[in-house]
Length: 334
Image (cartoon, rainbow, N blue to C red; front, side, top):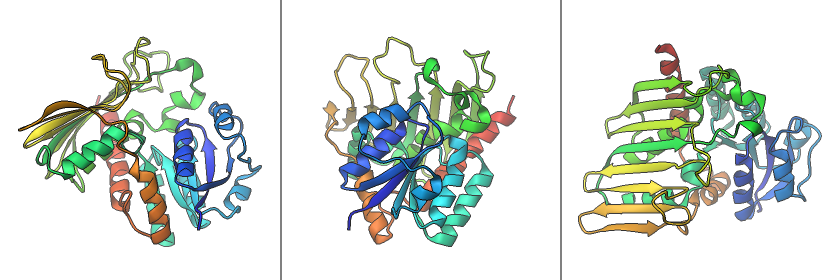
C-alpha cells in the first residue's frame, strides 16, 4: 500500500526537502495546509505545483493520510503534532520539534496514549550523504570507538527574508533549542550514548543589538559515559561563502578520525559531502555525495511495520530534552 502524507505549516524551507524525500520514496502527498502566506510558500508551489491546498487544518487532518510533515513556526509545531497524532497520523517534524518542556511533556503523553511515531528530521544528519558514509565507516570500525565529536553549525542570517518570528525568542525557541539540536543528535548517535550531561552552555547576541530577541551565537559541551562533545552554532556566515553555512563534523575515534565538510570545502574542492578519513592505514579525501539518505526509506518501513529503524523514539525525545536543558542553562548564566 502506498504511504500517503500531508504537509502542515510551510514556515521553514526544510519542508521542501521533507516533501521531496518522501515523494522519492514513492509516498503520495494528499495536500498541504498552512496559515496565511509564509515566505516559503511560493517556493513550495514552484516545486510541487500539482499538490492541492486544504482550506482548513481539519480538512487536512481528515484527508486520510498516514503521515503528517510539520514545518510550521517552531512554537506551533508541538500542538500540530499532537493534533495530528490524535487523528491517527504518524509525524515527521522539522527541528526543533518543540520549544519548551511543557510541549515536550505533551508530546510524550500523546505518543504514549496513541502509539504514534513522532520523528524529527534532523536534516544535518538525515539529508547529508557524507554523514551516511561516516556512519557506515564508524560501524565498520574504521576509527575505533568514537569518544569525541565536534559539531559546527554556522548559518547565514539572510535578514531581508526572515519573518518576524525569527527574531522572537518565544517563537523560535532559542539558538540552542533550534540549531544545536542537530549537533546534539549527532553526538548521541555517533558516540552511542543514550543520554548525556550538559557541562557548559552559552548564548550571546554579539552582532545584532537592534534585535534583542535574536541569539546569534551559542555553544554547548556534553559528556556521557561514552564520550564528550563540543558544539558551536551561529548566524555569522559571511557573504562570500557560496552557500548558507560551512557546516562541519569531526569524529574522534580511538583508532583515527573522520572530518566532514558537509556543504562546502573552502580548501578548494568543488561540490558537497567531502569526507576526510585518517586511521592506521588510510589518509584520504573521499567524495561521499552518493552515499544515500536512508532515513526516509527507514521511516516508511517503520510506519508500515511499527519498528524503530530510522531513529528510536527514546533518542528523539532525549535530543530535544538535552537541547532544552542546554538552552535553559545558557539563559540562566549571565
